[in-house]
Image (cartoon, rainbow, N blue to C red; front, side, top):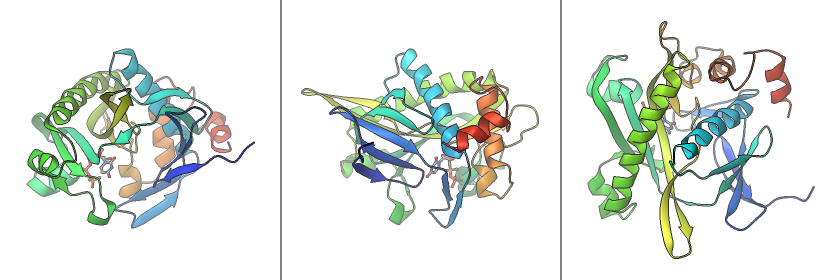
Length: 253
Ligand code: UDP
């Protein structure tokens, strides 16, 4: 194997140069971080599960005509993606109050919101990804008005689609975070969904018991993090058994 050129290393993923111009390889690590890097752990098999879950979701989104950077999964930890210029925003969509909005606005966790709410955070680790408004985004040229309109429309479409997809797996989609990129095709530029969609970036609650099946298990020291991610994968029909031999064999790759 030839050593690949590393383009970027983040908290949970690494990007390598792809096999063709305009492509990259996205590698899913087992590392987990929270509270702006203050809390860290290595969770055996998490990267494998996120790779599979994100592949599943992105494939379905591509199939409904929602453009994404995802091309194909290459192996247990890697996927081939299109190279995009990341728009420096974390786009959060919420259906139920939880996490920072519950704290910020004094709403009890679990309260359904009057309608789906989209929030923007500026992607800047040093600043702890602060909440920003459209005014900030356009004034500082992080994205154009047209891009913001496209991002809102795409995020609401993703929310509707994922709410149904997870409901079919008896899971409530409480909130999620997505990122977008600019895809340059000749002299055209398109906004496409980038990064990942996985239990690291969503709040997923069992529809009847409310049990958390997402990264809050790590943030709040609830234990059973990878087991919960495997449960999501099992309910979506991605893997056959949660916590079984299949997961162990995943994590060793
Ligand atoms: N989120 C994320 N990355 C971040 C911040 C938030 O994926 O850097 C996700 C988080 O998992 C949740 C949603 O975005 O599904 C809303 O997170 P919130 O603003 O409530 O932040 P938190 O409570 O995690 O600080």
